[in-house]
Length: 195
Image (cartoon, rainbow, N blue to C red):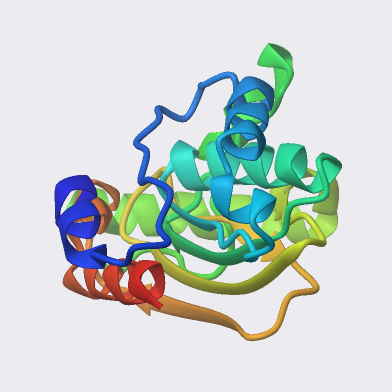
């Protein structure tokens, strides 16, 4: 998707398109964006679109948005596919495997039924103990979001707490590994990056 977006933009005022892994040094990258923003130096507004999958959406995009916010830079769009919660503390790393509650699996195989029963039990436990269910906090300086999630297997996209509007969320009947290749995700990412 990186190469497709980079080649499809073709606008003279696009600074660049970057691919970074979920565990990148986001503060350094935010400073890099601020420093290299030649458009901001000429008075044109900086437009930031963040696209992410799994931990890249639930951790990387959120961290970068927070760091950009600290520098006074707004994120116009976030396009996220199955954003998975990740704790900053290794003792809470197990929470990324906790089901989000927006679905309990749809497979009809024996393993699928066991998965569904386990997710249902964990979801009910999460209702009794809400702090168990992870929620991804979206920084305030995000204008709009498009989110795709699945509930076929773990890890699965977690709920987002956000003040941004519009905030579109769609559920798909595919497994987590297939969410990165989701046609709708690619289409929206290309469209939002080109706007």
